[in-house]
Length: 362
Ligand code: 13P
Ligand code: SF4
Image (cartoon, rainbow, N blue to C red; front, side, top):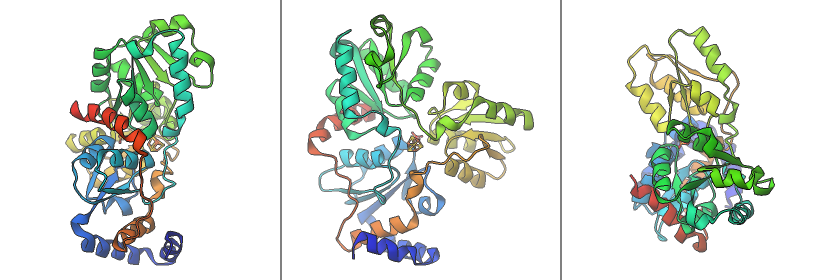
């Protein structure tokens, strides 16, 4: 049966039966399969994760596991990362191939190589620029960074990675999320006069040669379509309506939101912060809806709100549903693997180096 036919059949099956099928397939396949689940996954899928975590923790787990099959309940760049970090004998599956990340698509090969060429007309980037890419990027961009002495970072280790990068070269070119780069640099005390934004649509990214010469941090003009929806006014309203509420934000939010927040951190850090707070503490959180809803249920003694009055949900994370997870497990059982993620061999070497540089920094 084709995957399409199987999925059609599964969508005609009551969800309770699908949950039972997933349990049975998981039990039958045992250690053959490791299911990794990002914190933004919907509850029905997240419940089946053998390991849950943020992008950093899941990359570390992928690098460690010897399971022959890894089902990545997350988005495309995460499965690519897992494929790069696992051996050729291991198979990485993304349950729904349409689960992409709009931010990762904001820095394509042509734009990146044009940027490097244009920088070369002003400075010698191979001597003075460390390219750093957020893990939310294509394998090809990770490969570019590896080849040019650069490195990958996540929202959980960005500060450490920027310190390493400035330790090597005087400037950093940070892809693709302007906000993570800017928010991290602000906390490190980097003045605005040393940061510029690179707009890939404009010549020299919209900067003068002097601005490029003077910059220590060149921020690619990319963003997360989910986190950009949070606004500082939302924090003002929460504070007005809830005495003593703590505002928590993911660093993909704008600088204005992060500056007003009481705590800024990756999804894993936000969870830890809430878990360790005394009972009775209340929170308004600026990150994806599924995680905020889970925290609310997990810690009923710590009243938790979603920061925005509008729903900010990652629609691509949401694509992975029990039907797709069930189909992925069935394909392993039947020996007819579908939705395997394979990073082209020519990108593997340098992309792996840029990821290993990050993982080696701990
Ligand atoms: P972290 O997993 O690093 O917290 O990032 C959140 C995110 O947007 C994943 O795409
Ligand atoms: Fe990409 Fe934002 Fe979704 Fe994360 S939340 S996968 S950065 S679109």
